[in-house]
Amino acid sequence: MQFKLNRVMQMTAAVLAVGTLAACDSSSSDDNTAIFSLAVSDAPVDSAERVLVCFSSVELVGNGEGSQRFEVGGDNGAVPANDLCLDDSGNPIPNTRGVDLLTLQGANAESLVVGAEVPAGTYGQMRLDIANGSEIELTDGTIHDLRVPSNQLRLDGPTLTANQTFNYTLEFDLRKAVVAPPGLPHYLLKPRGLRLVDNAEVGHIEGQVAETLLLENECAVAPEDLTTPVAAVYLYNGHDVDFADMSDNSDDENGPYASTAVFFDGAAAYNFAIGFIQAGQYTIAVTCDTEDDPEEETELNFFHSENIDIEQGVTLEIVVGADS
Image 1: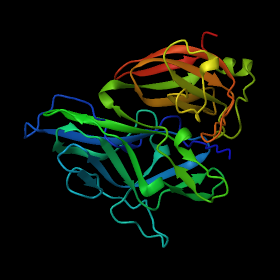
Image 2 (image 1 turned 90 degrees about the horizontal axis):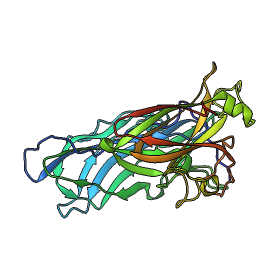
Image 3 (image 1 turned 30 degrees about the vertical axis):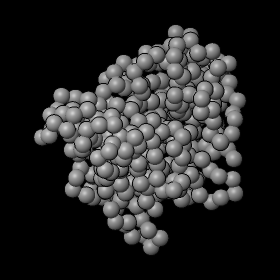
């Protein structure tokens, strides 16, 4: 089933602070502890107005020191609850933190755990418990439940060195993670497309695609509906990646590091953004194909690519195709 989301804002949304674990020079009160913070971020889907995810807890496990659990509203570093997550009667669900991932894009992020003191060491797994109340609102105004298998997102945990401060961000690439199961009324949020990054090791992109490039390749420019994407930008690991080696979002091995839609600003610019990118070399590519179902193989016709370098702590401002 083809699933195409339309963003409210541009590009990569940094939403939940699942904690960018970044080593800094902060000391702890105990030689065997570290300071941990967690945040979340998001690269948006193309046809949704809202993607509300309801978090109830974050847990670090597998360090031989017992589980380190941070429940929303707790007093051990977890953030306070809010009233965005509602039950069937319309009442706020206690001890939940609702985050609309589409409101936090690019280098933006919202914290889930802040300044928690935890035992140092290697944690085998990080778990995020997702409560009821999560939902997705499409551009046609319809609202659907957004469910997470087993109500929990699991990913490899961090290594926290003693007497250091760590900040990590969990980046949600919603073009990969959100799927519409055929024949079912709800949507699924899958672990695919999630990446945990150290904030000290990432950079960001704030970009545009040149209008002349879009026109030369017959993309539909200047749409009346500004929520309609005109193109898509894909980011692949390494320089000089051939078009033939650029897979779609359904390919977990050869697919893009990240992707996002390009939107007209109503004046003259065609904007996109990608946040929390691991520093390194990448190839950025452009296509007029804006539909890429992560559950099905999609043929993407790329017409332009460039080599770029992402530096730690730097936001790359780029106009793709400016020299074409």
